[in-house]
Length: 587
Image 1: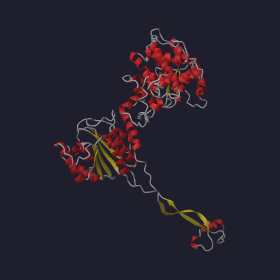
Image 2: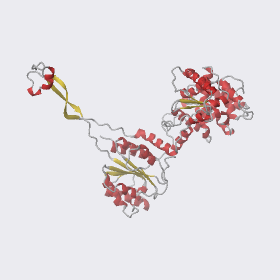
Image 3: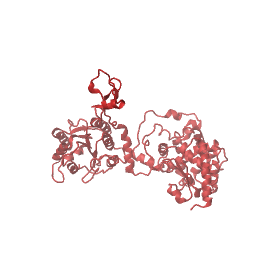
């Protein structure tokens, strides 16, 4: 239950909100802050540890007022709220920029990537606080003085990270050394603090570009400081900022991301030293277009507060990578209807056919019709009619997940990506899709029949077995036990292990017979995209591969399988685009 003091404090902080918004712009619009009167209430909002936080998902600010009181910051409502608004307006500003920032930080912190969220938080705080202190004349320095006063004597023996961080603020605001706290500083630390302050000023309008430089500056201190997080734990207001946000855009590796992981002393814009180092803008590599591996994307998202499993991240990864390669949404012309449609009335004049007179409408205009004056006739036209849609061919896809294939949740699997491109293109065209993932005996996963649910389809495609190689003949047999109402095209994505589909099944039935029946019952043909050498038909091979090649030639000759040799798994993406256009684009 709220006390009178709680209510007064909440009212005071709520009254400061409009002024805090106006610090950035009188046109700034954010939802009112969540001012929590208890730790339980703050925890329900997702806030723990820090006295304030932001949520990029719904553009919210959350404040733990009991912790604010405990830290002696009751009277700093304007400063605290303006700072949190700064995270929404300036840095990071959006979930996509938070992902980009953490990617740069992680690249600059080899072996210490777990500290990237903390370093990113401290980094964005510097830009926001420097602007509020100097341009808005807010008491940001006093907040750090208050936090220093509230710490114990033992805690004040801070490590290098916190001392360096405080020295950067002291340089920015021309304060005495040690005025904001921190431990002993030697000449090396003082020099790095000066470089850090210069970095904040030089890149004030391009803070993303210098993120790697700041992380590189802190790296040696993080190595030496085993408790780097402790002094700043109350300030981590962006730790889970992107929780619940969409993850689009986090896959791309930016051209200047790698080049940004340099020490500020090597950037002459910061140090002022002459040397071979070119300005940051000149070092941006053209082209680029590289994409992260699934595990790298997962690490970035988890560091941003996105609470997803590796499998859920993989589903998002392959959906986003597939989107640029999908066929366009189908559009069909609507031909003119052959059925005449009444459009209105026009005067009937003497000389027109007598049978054209609409007597009802003529009498309604005058009970005594006057030919050529009150007589009217109907006007007809033709109206576009809805085209009759052709039934799209359903897709029955079997994807190899044996030990020779990459795990799609860790590294890019072009089998999974090709499957995603083809399956999502089929859905766009109105088809239904069944996906079967297979490996060794009894290692098989399948969608619940032919479905139109993207998550179900991608959920199967992004799983992994990594076992032996044994095609699930029984699933093919069960799918085509009877003729289907809709035609289905059968697609195999595998390597030379696909010929296990021609072995006998668990009931002793011939795989050749099952394959032939499946093609007949499906009624729309079958395709194999296999990792084989391009000239496999005429290539000299060992005894095992020769049998495999002979089986494939027989499958094409006797059953009509369309076999595509793919020398590199990367080439499966080209195959997927061509297959999708051929089967799911209407000419």
